[in-house]
Length: 112
Image 1: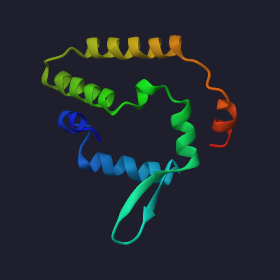
Image 2 (image 1 turned 90 degrees about the vertical axis):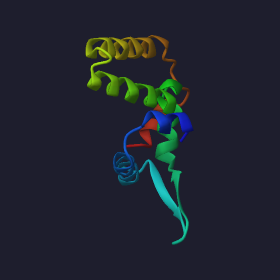
Image 3 (image 1 turned 45 degrees about the vertical axis):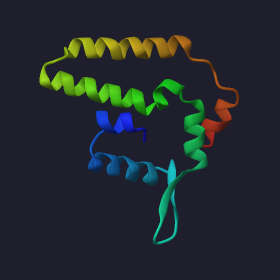
């Protein structure tokens, strides 16, 4: 995880742990290694999902930025309506600029 994402606070260690457990449970990543050293590896299902997902959504920096804005909304330093407007704008832009990924049907079919 990039340092800037950690500084801006992508969740807590507990929420990160819960997210990792969910990714393992639904089959997007798997644990590898021995008793002493464990690491996470994406499964074929995880790689397929990342392949068809827009790059902007994959960005830890974007997630950290959104987390920071949510904290600012909570503190009253940023309007919730402005936050939601930005989210709507981002989604509309993603939909407008989405390009069909070659063989996406094959990749995503294998996920089910």
